[in-house]
Length: 522
Image (spheres, rainbow, N blue to C red):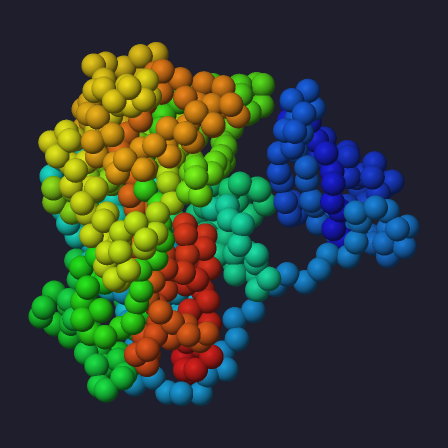
């Protein structure tokens, strides 16, 4: 096959016929010469609003490929080998099945790969299976009563289930783990377009179905799932894992333990630390969620409302980074709490992104110099802020208009923007919830972003808090073979401090499965 880059197609004429017409023109061939083709990449070029177009990279099978290559046409070359390879080189015999703790993207993909290659993993999840979890979360948004083990953070699918389902990442993929992860998503029901879009997303509605399909595949291949099963202790023999204790009661023996526990598993962090698993505090970021009309963002970015736009903005406030994070076009701000009397928010979109509002976290970087250098000082800091957020509105999401945030006043009503929330909300003064240095940096950053996207800091812009679960506040240490200081224990994913989002978590799950296969036989 050959690869052709740099095929430009106007967004107004984005059809298969137009794409193939451009390909044929570039290669000076007829369409009948194409046996078949696959889109490898598709991205939007909107640098000039009067010339917005998609840029394609296409792989083709032709009947005269050698002649085409010899023609030395610009951006035309032999398709490189980009196949993912899972090597099993391990010789050590497992006495027990591998145990994977957590069924978010990291744990799910680690288990998926292990199951595919004969390791028959046992997946232990503190929360509910997807079908029950969705019902529990919807009830929480209606009543405000949180299930501390099954919620927006915990349960099958992990925190990414109730998000935008964004899959874009800047991580280099030299081992093609990302490609493999996307192929697995598609095999289990995700839209095929994620294989080539520059900024792919699935949406929480489709992602929940994909997770169930992945679960069924793992079971079909000999794996097992245990829900409502919190790991309350681990069993050690000297410096080696022997098993886990579930719900302070039952035991599961294992000589391989994958810790894919998620960034909000604070109780599990403490238990692991007490069992002498090494970890350290990690910088993270906190801030708020902002809501704008999606149409405003579309017009500002592209000058048209025909394309759904996103954005990524950064600012430096006296050495502190202020940036947008997890932007959700056409989405909702959701109550993402996982502990009683503490409140955190996140952003979520369905696949169609049709709520009418864009929302994004606007967050400020903080580190151990702000909250302390002991492993759990970051957790303590998060909890203090989340408790203030809960108290500000008696458990409802605290909300404020931008003009009132600037003036240190509680809002009395909404302006021109219709709010889009999942969960109850009320008005409060977010300046009383956030540390003063965070509020000051946010105000600077929002005003700076307004110069890039006019209206970003408009008087009626809706601000909600608190965005505190941007990443794990700790890192569970591991060596180059992905093993912690306890033999057989593999810290994995975002909760362990090695990923940041669905894609990088999935990739880390695959990486850990590879590390296990490098030592152990199926």
